[in-house]
Length: 333
Image (cartoon, rainbow, N blue to C red; front, side):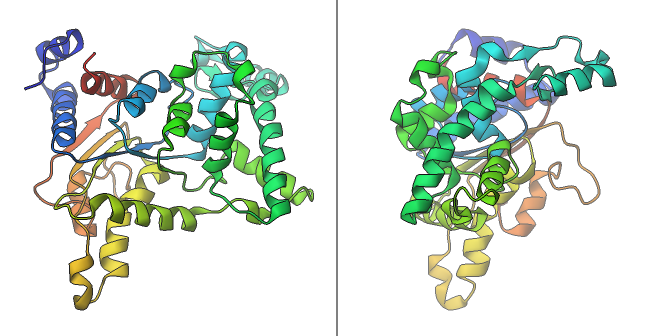
């Protein structure tokens, strides 16, 4: 039984039914999975980094409650943007009332908008781009190749940005991940601001596109990680999914990729891996005809991703509210 804490006491008393009840049960099962020695794999979609999820996720990483992450290219970079340019962000309380003219003014001012917050293009995006161009050029000149997040890990660990921090660095989840050398997977990285900048500068003749590896290399790295983490175990790691999209769809496929594609022959049956041992998705996506982000967990059984007995939770709610609550529960806040 979980020890009493103010947050747990509040949640157990007030979160009884519907989505609220699922939040408590999912948090309890997350904790139980860790207690059984199963690692937890987390996926990060949406604009969670701009929502400052690092204030709780960074501590989850430091305390060993998250063991690997799959995220979009946007979440990868936006945590660093917030780290160095937080004071320059433009907040809009009445964002639903913005007119087209208001949006044009933000565009002309260099403030791309994410719902109620605008990221400062010059103070954040272009600043980080300049640091990365040096690394991309150096790698290209030497004929080196690396996964995209490795360049950001190197930048954060080098100390080159330390004098530019505008938030407490303990609230940066990517810095916490870099310090632990956390396994990180960024499918579709080219669909991000820095990914676009990488291609643009390569097109201008700055370096070779080969300096950054792509999604197939991330899948190969994920296969190696999964096979290593389940070696000698009867259960797979847990899977905690924030949002939908490629951040979740890509990594959950590693199990059928191993079992159905690599070890498909009967002679290789002994090499097959256990399925994910826990599944929870927090998303506002709804179940629809042909939609995957809102598909109920049981559908994943038919694709060889989840089993029938493992705990499965679908929380149809705002992840910026729910995820910190579950993290707080697991951290014992």
